[in-house]
Length: 313
Image (cartoon, rainbow, N blue to C red):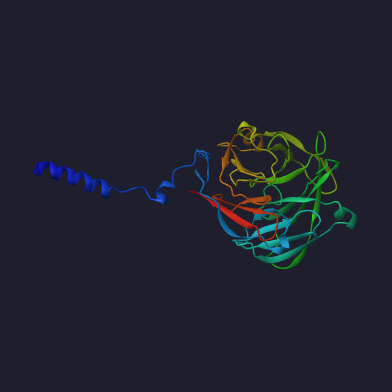
């Protein structure tokens, strides 16, 4: 071999040894094809992987709903499923209980048939700056309840206290439904429920005209479907502050309904449904956006289960 050829060969070998190879962290940043990007929408274009932020407290062994406070930074409001006391809990980001709020205003006979399934936070009425919490007594496993209820009350301070609720009753236009998801339009305070269906991600019903002392008839807005009908039974939902994105939690996955420029739920329910990252949990029944709409938190039934947060990539 000539001296020149030897030098060329040595250079090639040195280049092969020193060429930078993708590190594990770099290769992991490649977009996951399961999760299509959200184009033309406020908030995240892509989401990162879920990360553990805390654990479900013993007091919330049947955690069924989460709502992030807009008054108290870092506070999550949470409640249990049916068969528990009529209470609300304030949590920090790790799931630690900060306060317990006893809810009043129900007759004992009314409390006996209660099945609390979700919670939402928004204006107490259209145009109001004061925020209220809305607790959804909408569970109906055997689909027999002729009317179900939303409990409304002003967002309390983070302290042990008692708060009286207003009862807002409604019925469905067709038949009784089992439901576990309540959402609210941030700008108008308009409420809607998403039913828990065996063959879809749920029927969406708007609750216009709710008022104490009356039974409102819900209005059907549409049906939500997973791509390829691969999932069903929505157990929790959260509407983005923009009104252009809607998170749906099932027992196995997280979905997002997307519709750029949607100004009402009627438009949003016609949008694209895409899968987004979500953790595996024992019985996930709680999801909420954090203020700003660039992160969301998920919770599960059973004390000691991990709580997760998903942020933008």
